[in-house]
Length: 241
Image (tube, rainbow, N blue to C red):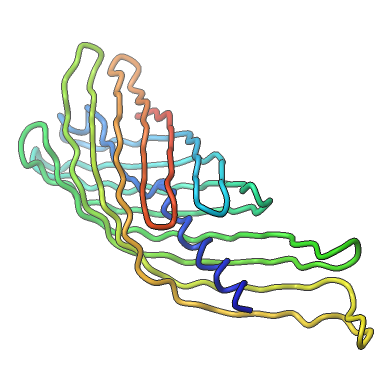
């Protein structure tokens, strides 16, 4: 059971990758920076996550909506889905929602504060031999706050927007281990084991760069995220409308 709880903790730490997927919320596009009104966006993401015990790669989709009521502040909400596969054959589905409030500190600089919720469902098959083994299922809920800055640099094709964020999250997980095969001593099927655990708070830092192409209202983004549990690199292509 101790091994299962440790594995559950590792999975929970992976929720940083989302980030964003979209855990990393900006960048806010050039048009949202400059104009009053609303704007939506859709995006495709590639994610690579590296930890001491395993690596993960996967793809995701995201949707965002921004509202700027005046020239000094804006509201930003985003939602995303990711599917990740690990080198140990673990599969993970992650769903997340983020909200941010942004305030212009200058024409080019915006400060953000907000909250995020992430839910993941993971599965892993662990064979012990040709006829015995375990299927492990883990459901994890993480929630927390984030804050950061982004800076708009005007260039000929639109904007280059570097940004930095910090996320502080915690949560809980539920683990179910289903052993298949029969106990050789009793001849009976193995019982199903379930457990739950609280996830200690995690502090993660995200650094990113967005290139916004004004003529086609599209941005190409990169993000690097670092935490005690591992490091993540995300690349995304976003279209704003």
